[in-house]
Image 1 (cartoon, rainbow, N blue to C red):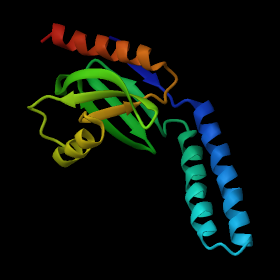
Image 2: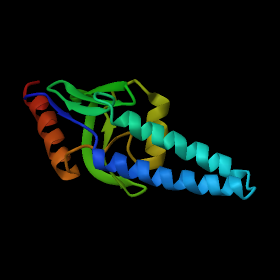
Image 3: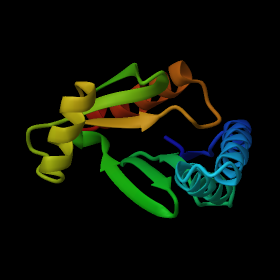
Length: 154
């Protein structure tokens, strides 16, 4: 199968920036009225704006599907997972955010603690956010197709 790359949804990043900006303004008003917690609000949501701007840079974030597996890149850091290391894939949500959840095979030995934490929080060992320029159902179907191609040629 051909390699496919999906970029983050720019509309979501712009909405995130606007929401952060509103909270920063609120934090500034808190500071002006003598509320010290306003600093925390302004700084925290200021960081949110920085993250959303970085996400707009080319190749800062993406999801790449290949014959061998998938690579998730976020904030210029990438993580690759082989299809052979995945047991199953399913659609779900965590705190209202649509995601593709998966469990690793028993042979997969990396990230033991991270998998335990993820399993506790979501019921699955791994997840891919559905924040790319493809619908969640379409992404799941495509990922299942890639995975089934690997199984066929084993």
